[in-house]
Image 1 (cartoon, rainbow, N blue to C red):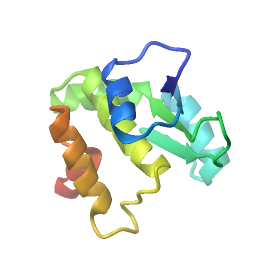
Image 2: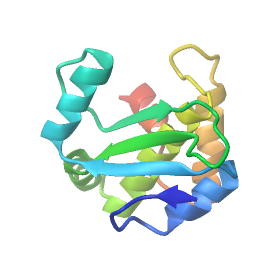
Image 3: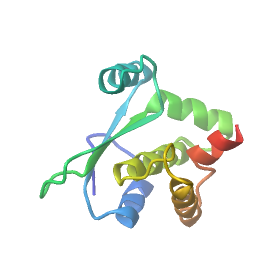
Length: 135
């Protein structure tokens, strides 16, 4: 289940249920807010599209938090010719896989394979990792 105070695409509930029985906290921010979070939490003084923060396993508590930059969602969706909902779903998948322990910077392609499996199942455009590898 997704815990979010804002409206979000319904497909995120389906993706979350497909990947985990755990609860996920979801937040949407603008580029400046994301830059501040990225600086405070990771030491990078720049904005980014999605951040994820796995949390300690505590009974009846979320397993992690995902923060999505709405400014970059709109920019990337327009640039790539798909909807904001599709871009949000792609970023949510990316963030949720990180919460679940995947790490494309350290693994041997397992996160990319899982992303491809999920985007195929939900009929979404190319994943973040695939776009990055092609770009």
